[in-house]
Length: 298
Image (spheres, rainbow, N blue to C red):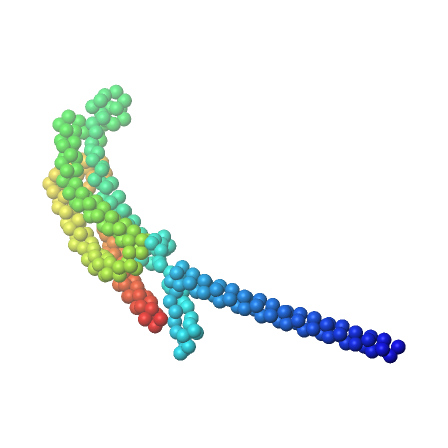
C-alpha cells in the first residue's frame, strides 16, 4: 500500500507537470498569436494611412501646412474650388438689372422712332373712285383734282424730309442695345471676374454713352424743329386745315416727346451703370487680394 500510494502520488505529480507544461505552452502560443495579429493590424493601418495620404495628394492636390516643429504633425487644407464658367443669377444682381434696363430703354427708343418713320401714309383720294366712295369720302372735306395731287405730293416730300432724324435715332439705339447685351453676356460668363480691367472699360464707355445721350437728344429735336419749320410742312398743314383735318400740325407729336423722355432715362441708366461697374471693380480687386493673401499664408 505505501508503494502504491507513492506511485499514485508520483503519477499525479507527472500528470500535473504535464498539465502545467501544456498550459504554459498554450499560453505562450496565444501570446505569440496575439502579437502577430497586432503587428499585422498595425501594418494594415499604416498601409491604409499611406494610401489615403497618397490619394489626398494625387486626387485633391492638397498642400500640407506645418503646424509645429514635428514634421509628422501636418494639416491639410482643401484648395479653393474653381469658379463656374457662367452664372445666370448675375441677371438678378444690380448690374444685371441695370444692363437689362439699358436694353429696354434703347428698345423703346427704336420703337418710338420707328412708328413715325414707317407711317408714310398720305392723303388717299377715295372720293374720285365714284359711287359709295364719293358718298362717304366726298364732300367739303375731300380734296379733288389738282388739290388732291398737290397734297399727295406734299405728303411724300414731308415723309422724305423727316426720315433722317428717325434713321439716326434707330441706328444709335440699335448699337447701344447691342452694347448693353454684350456687357450683360460678359457678366453672365464671369469675364469681369477673371479679367477685372473689363469693368474699367465698361465704366468709361457707359459714362461716355450717358453723356453722349445729351447732345444726341439735342440734335434729334433740332432736326425735328428744322423739319417742322420747313415750308413743305407749313403748306401741308394749311391745306389739311382748310378741309378741317386734324393731326397734321407742324409741331412735336407724342412719339417725339416720348423719344426725348426715354433719352433722358438713358442718361441716368448708363451713368448709374458706370458707377456700378466701378464698385464691382473694387469688390473684385479686394476679393482677389484676400485670396492671394490666403495662398501666401499657406
